[in-house]
Length: 471
Image (cartoon, rainbow, N blue to C red):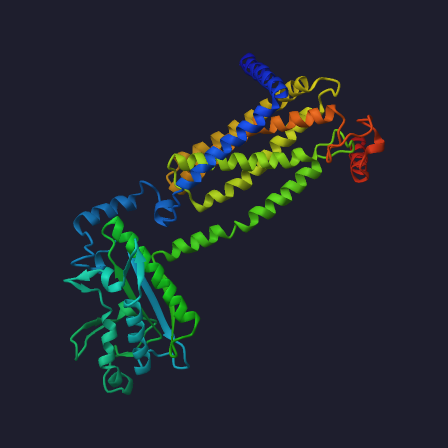
């Protein structure tokens, strides 16, 4: 067993040493080709399929609930276009929902002025115009129907008797009663919330009320059309509430897309941190890659290590999109992970470089560096890739997608570090060989290890580290 591990280690050492020597002799290829490949892969962002459906992403792929729902739908299928029945709904579908509470001092909604505004609200919702595929339509054009009539909130017909209810001439009986004018059977628990009921089942007060508007969602086109109507519904309801356009009622809106929007908003909240995180990590990398010797110091490699990780992550994401894999908001966490992995690889390679002899030619130093560092990087990268790709067998689609993107990003980060970043190291090695300044790349005094050329703050760091080692 020990012999087998040793053989693998020796083989990898030889292969990476040859690769390092080749990179040292031809660094230009390893700078240009990875950049071109990254740009090519990044064109995959044009094929992005952004997925935000919570049920698809966060429910088990083969859960028992989905099996049981399929059985119910086989016998009790919802027909949105002809015989719509709320009791048969097994999926969220497309709908708009408003919850109404009193805005003034009287919390009871059973008042004439409230029902006048409820009628006005209903008219606004039914006339809300949405656009899909170049076509303008209203709720009446897309509504779920029963016998060619749109689903209607019959509780609004209480306005025919609301004066008698408000004066106390007529009492509303809980939980159901017939409207003496329209003969609607009002099922109050469906519409009223927090209802106060007397001992003889008479409604005393209604502090909240809901209205629901269902739109057709039998086909994919109808579903997308319904989603467009939901967008318009949420926008117009937000406008009326935010601008305080109703005098007696306050409204809260909800739609099937509300959860999607909140998840998307939560995802977008991390985007502003990308630039600040990249700047902070880059600054940290640049500082930690510097040393007292102004020739052997390598601040720009700290920057290029971050650039390599970001470029590799973008290339990996682009390839995944070319493969038709959906993109989800959680994937935005991957770049932070990849930058961390990339910086770790950067430090490993720099440490191996500094252990090589400055007297050796650059190709030989690259060979020694790669034979030492690349094996370690390979093992850790393979471990990371396996860890992520094991997640691909998860029963949750969101985990599968995230692990696929992250696994590809780890693979690309590894490849870019042993090619692009190694090419950057070779160029830096030639700069060091020519005794050029680490930052300004200008010719300086020939003492490449002279203390005279040290930056004061980094000389202090070296002294502190030396003192700690002695302890």
